[in-house]
Image (cartoon, rainbow, N blue to C red; front, side):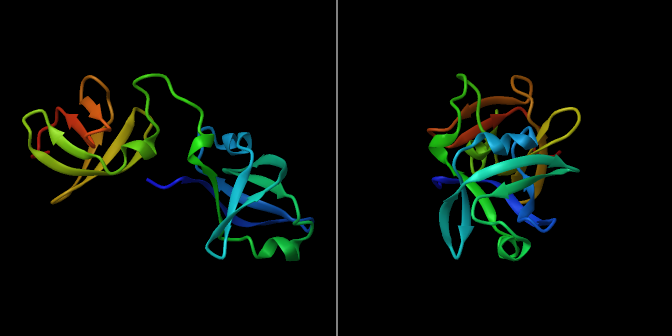
Length: 166
């Protein structure tokens, strides 16, 4: 598992004073500003950047990064990813997981049938959903206790109560 966790992406420019528009992967989206430092990927390398200011903007967030004081300087940042180091994540309570810790786990039914691997997770209004990639893609609700019976990160598996034909 990588030491780097991508928490956002620079999607555009805002104004003439070096502000950038970013899409944040954090929940809530403004949570991206809680990480210090943020790291910017440029030329295949991660380097720390100083976050000077931030504002919510539509479905994204506006960021003012140190060293980028005009639109021309900020232009080369568009498309770059923003990340943190894994150790910057706050600790979780026992039994809680970051989604990235679940990605790649083997998914087995309670009867031992392998369905594939957790490719990703996403939110819906009702509950989170696990995308399992195997011989076909399955969307399984992430409902602890009812559907997701067991998660064992050490063994790299998730056990689900799920009909393999569904």
